[in-house]
Image 1 (cartoon, rainbow, N blue to C red):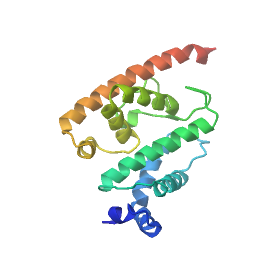
Image 2 (cartoon, one colour):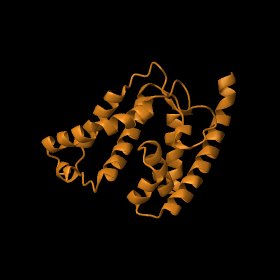
Image 3 (cartoon, helix red, strand yellow):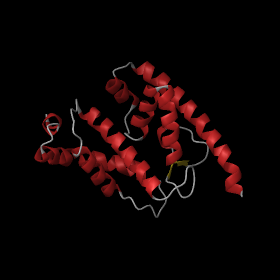
Image 4 (cartoon, rainbow, N blue to C red):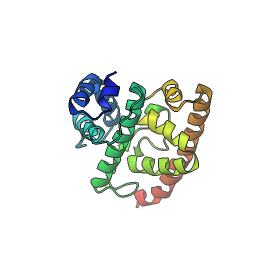
Length: 189
């Protein structure tokens, strides 16, 4: 009910929605920020507030349910984190770029941490091959959704999601390992 009324764009309804989901968004933001470098300038509250501003700025907000809302929020959080990493002057795959551990979501990264910009590039490449697999990774990693929730959100069977998740993890691992191997000579020099 609250999501439907908030989808009209009324500021008061959006504020009530934010009050209702603030704790969930805060947990989601903490997951993304807990393993960042110690001097990271983004705090969970700032990430939530920036995501909120982007959510209320959307022209069309026809959220079907709570899961759909968090799927949209996960896309927004991903964009904010990627934009923040780019604005910090990070070079492609290095230069102080934000690094996040993928093992938290079951993706085995080549090193202990992964450059967030490298992940964004890899997800873009994966989306050009298989959009659903890229969406599953985005919902799992940035949205904190379970595979069951993703199956519901995407309207496909759980076994399909399991297969796509396994394939996406393998593809990302290979892609990120290749990128890491290409970067290794520059790190040593």
